[in-house]
Length: 464
Ligand SMILES: Nc1ncnc2c1ncn2[C@@H]1O[C@H](COP(=O)(O)OP(=O)(O)OP(=O)(O)O)[C@@H](O)[C@H]1O
Ligand SMILES: [Mg+2]
Image 1 (cartoon, rainbow, N blue to C red):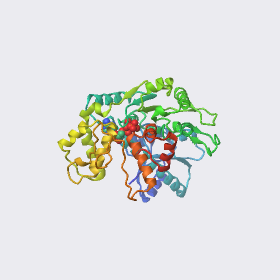
Image 2 (cartoon, rainbow, N blue to C red; image 1 turned 120 degrees about the vertical axis):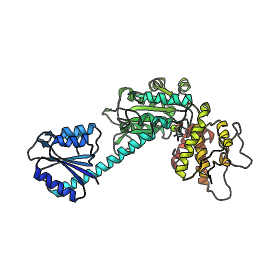
Image 3 (cartoon, rainbow, N blue to C red; image 1 turned 135 degrees about the vertical axis):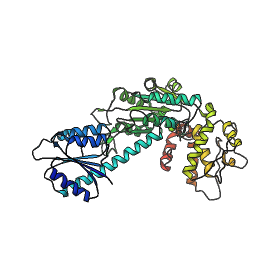
Image 4 (cartoon, rainbow, N blue to C red; image 1 turned 180 degrees about the horizontal axis):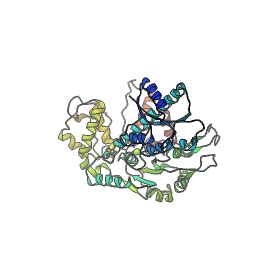
């Protein structure tokens, strides 16, 4: 049952309200003074979905209590009732996020409608908050698994960084080493956890689109810009902006980004107004940015700005002692997801997993374990689905089965797969093998980035 807190000093009216909402199925708590309401809210911690409060009470103003409740993270919606001719301080009420206010006397019909709106809004906010705290649990530093010195160092550094009000962090590391994971951990266990986490992959969009996505645009800024659009940087206000594969960003846009980061201000495309944003930028790269700077492909000034704090994630082959721990965690995860019951990893299977070089790092290990779990029939992790290519093997196996890390792909020519599906399958596989690095994938397929991007969009091949 949802709780409705009514703060009303007129006993008769308070009682009437209480009975009305009890009949409507609420658990109603009535407080005749602000002091009492404060005690209920902040000490006994009742968590009303909606608070219906008189504005001017004998012992103070309802807005003061709302302010205290908000400071403590209370999410319920507040509806105020004001006496005729009393000051309403509408501006402050709005700033504090009051849902609505009504002038007394008001009919129950009107009041019911407003309360119903407040209920919808409060429920939506609770859902968001629950989601945020679930993410916080999911993305604590412990989510980065491993007991090797290298893995510990990563967690220690993250723990230290998360309390600092940093404006930018750079995460470097090969594909699949956990850059995306660490970016989320930095956000959800840091001081900005309640703010938004906005992710942008700098290769997924062509240059012009990336610019208008990041900075937003005003109506008519370019052909096709129908309405005004809040860019991702604005959307990340108060939170973190995760720029994945930053090395692929166009140099002109890099310059614009740097200016925005340094001045904490931006202008929408086609806009005059300067918009202030407060964001933490988390950038990730799997390319060596120092050499990209040397080659003139990445701006030195942006590099220096972003890499004040740089976190380099170790490749899995550099921390092979973590493989067993990772495997066991992944087995548990995929058992749950796929409703399987694998309990043993035979020693020879574990030995093969530990001997492998893992060019695709933890992501590749995840894929292998997922496949084995999906294809398991009993409590043992099946060895036949490991399909780990010997490190230097580049030939498809004799059975014609595609091997991890090989440059080959196997397709049926028996009519069971349509040409378009093959195209899609080839691109998807190549993307996976290259950790969704569009440049590398385009090279492997002997095509251009533009062509590849077009097909990625056409087939909706986004990283899951
Ligand atoms: N130390 C780790 N512990 C647990 N899971 C991990 C760890 N490192 C990576 N993973 C998992 O492996 C997968 C790949 O990691 P992630 O996507 O973060 O890699 P990435 O470095 O961003 O790769 P890319 O450069 O290809 O984008 C994710 O599912 C992530 O949760
Ligand atoms: Mg990533």
